[in-house]
Structure formats: C-alpha cells, structure tokens
Amino acid sequence: MNPNAEFDLIVYGATGYTGRLVAEYLAQRYGIGGEVKWAMGGRSAAKLAQVRDEMGAPAETPLVVADAEDAAELDVMVRRAKAIVTTVGPYQLYGDKLVAACAAAGTDYLDLCGEPNWMAHVIATHDAAAKASGARILHSCGFDSIPFELGVYFAEETAKAKLGGPVPRVKGRIRAMRGGLSGGTAASGAATMAAIQKDPSLIALMMNPFALTPGFQGPDQPPGNAVEHDPDLGVDVGPFMMAAINTKNVHRSNALMGHPWGKDFAYDEMSVVVPGAPTEFTGMGEGMPKPGEGPSKAEREAGFYDIAFIGLAPDGRKVRVSVKGDRDPGYGSTSKMLAEAAICLIRDRPDVAGGVWTPGAAMGMQLVDRLGANAGVTFAVEA
Image (cartoon, rainbow, N blue to C red; front, side, top):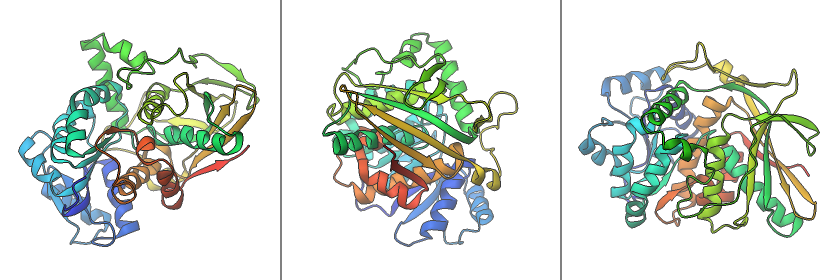
C-alpha cells in the first residue's frame, strides 16, 4: 500500500457500466472528500466529466486521466492512490501494464477478474515484485469469487466454532439466483476462449482446480459435471458455470493461509435444479449485453442470490451456512463488493504483506463483517 497517497482509491474504468456503478456507490455511501478519498479514473477527461455529471456527483469529484496502454500515464496514476480498483477488462487484454505499475509502485490493486489463465500469469510474473514493494494484488473481488471464497471461509470458521476444528470437505450450492452476467464478463469469456485457441496448453490450466496454487497439487476433486441428488439439501443439483474459476480461488485461499483446511481439502460447486425455482442467470447467449451495457436500476435491484455451504466432518457431523446478496450478482452486488473490498484492504488490513492474494485470505472475517454492514451481502449460520 502507498501510505502517503493523495487518494485512498481510484476507480479506473469509471466510464464503463460496472465502473460507473462502483463510482455511484462510493458517491452515495461515502460522498466526496469525506472519510474515503476517491477519484474517478479513465482514458478520457471529457467522458469522465460527462459520467460524473450524469451520476449527479459533485463537480469537485476528482478525475484522473490515464490510458491503459500508456505505461507512463499509468505509473503517474497509481502513485496517486493507496489502491486502484479497476473494471477495465478483459484483463488479459488490458490489465498487464496496470498490474505491473501497481506491483512496482507498491500500490494495492483490486479487479473483477474471472480469467484464470491471466491470473496464473500475474502470479508467475508479478508476485515477487508485489512482495518486494508491498503492493497487495487481489483478483476476483466481485461475484467472481467473493461470495464463494468467503462462503467457504465462513463455513470453516463455523466448523471450528461448532465442531472443534475445520472440515476437509465443503460443498457450495446455489439455491436461488436472479440477475445477469455483465457484458464485460462475456467479453472476458470470449478473450479466454481466443487465448485457448491460440495456446491449447491452457486447457489443462482451465481444467485444474489447483491452477492458481503453483507448487502445490491437491487431490482429485468432485467433478460436479452431471446432475446428481444432494442428500444434505434433499434436492437435485447440476453443473454451475462459474465453478471453474471459483474453485481455483478457494484452493488458492487455502494455500495462501498455510492449508488450515488441510492439504486434502475438497470443494465443489453446483446449482440446485428444481423446476420453477428462481435460478435464473440471464444474459446468456443471444442478446447478451456488450461491454458497457447492462440492466436498468430496477432490474438490478430485483436481483438476488442465495448460496448454501455445507461443511462435512469425517465423523458425519455437519455445518451449514448461507451467503445471500440483495442485488443482482453481476452488477449491483459486484459493484458494492469491489468497493468495500478495497476500503477493507486499506483501512482494516494495512498489516497484510505484499503479494498476489485472494480477498478471503487477505481480509477474512473483517471483509465478511464489512460486506454484511455495508454491501447487502449477509453471512449466516443455518445449522
């Protein structure tokens, strides 16, 4: 972290759909020049000013101009902030220079990345520099993958309290969800597919749950690739499209913390398949929004999600916790999670050393508590 910076954080990509939501959230919750000093960043001063005015934010809202392809401009920008919050994706296309600038300057970096191929590249390329400078690099600070990564963390903390120790097996089960994927998420998926076509060796990385734990390969994991009956919920469950990224982040968290859940820890994610249940993840396929597009405010506020995490002890004892969000996952909830993760990192966890982290491993219960207090993401013990 850059302790003497002008701003606590800069929202880079504030003229884009999700970046604007982050800026709107900060303006509404924290104001301008108050306890959180933040600025809007992007490549066009005119577009930043236009979005600021459309948001109804004060004219004195700071604007910072930097082009994602201009390393010199990025270097100047990152040295003005304790943390950079970036929504400029696909990150494998537009993120390299920014994460390098942050790692070199000691500035914290948080994104919404769900691109495991690029995340593995960042770990290999920038982890050492971030450790040297003190920069904390955090990927996947939205619905990819905070509710899942922190949900497992919360389930394990509950197991320690109720069962006397962590459990070696956790199941993530999406019980209900309504909302949409962002256009940026679709673009990231397309960029990842293009990267795989260019380099077929990436297929093995995408299939490996331990692709983000270099030097550690754990046991075979539950496949989660076919419909099956879940006796702990009493319903049928099927494959969940985001499991491929979330499971990697969960295993990285376990590794970063020194494997408190065991080196044989097993985790999978599946979605309840009950006819008529609100498990809608809209925006797939035809008519999917382009980057910069998304649903109306009313549609975002009508969205939600409800995820159960069941921890299984070897002796048959169990715990069950839930993570619920009060907005659609891809936009409304994600924008609040990203903003609060950045504030939590710089305010509540200045002691965390530099390096490429996951949100849960870096912030743990402090982030659980902050999300519950401010971001409409609630963690609860059910059994």
